[in-house]
Length: 150
Image (cartoon, rainbow, N blue to C red; front, top):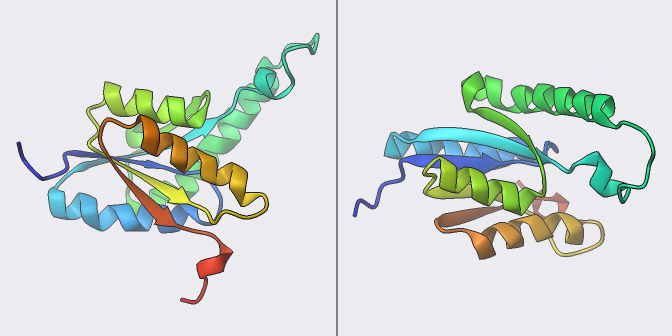
């Protein structure tokens, strides 16, 4: 078995830290001559509202989807990540990341990992969930304000 990575998936939350997560993955992809995909997961709107709203959320979901695609492009395009390797999916982040990784033979998942305080507790749970269900290596990149000593 080769110890090189062939396909690297960078999972981002579209915050300012997303650039840092992608920038950590790029040299690994270069060294391994690996394909690099970047993805963002949107939680379905119906999920957020418990599904009891008697209105069609499709058009709002489409707008959110379009906005997420634009934000992802702003992160990916400067680093020459091809459009077809930029993915916005709807679902629960860790589930969708695992599904994508298995369907596309990903052998390294790169995620941002936030500090464990305040609102970051919620955000940090995605990287934990990704780690626990992954069938490949996971690189958690430290992000957040607590390490802004650079």
